[in-house]
Image: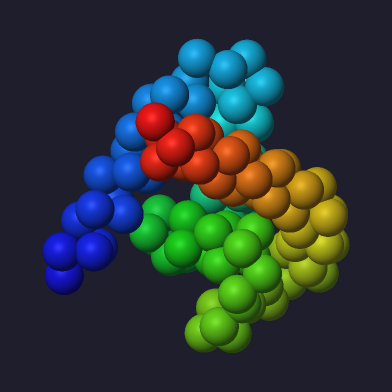
Length: 108
């Protein structure tokens, strides 16, 4: 359990440190906009709650895809295809930047 808190602490330090980097901020804002737009879309079109919608967005962007939720309408399926193609790159770029910042924190 201790290692979890140490990792969480390092993640928070890396995140805070990353906010100083303009590229990190751009990726973070893009990721937030992507999550908000996806959450609004799925809660409106699919009728899911906010928690289910954001859960689906994060599972989709991280490519985990448990399959417990899935799009049921044609519009949702098309949106999900576009959402994944655009969002996966942003998500991976953000995670890469966090990892780079984390490595900078642990070296000091």
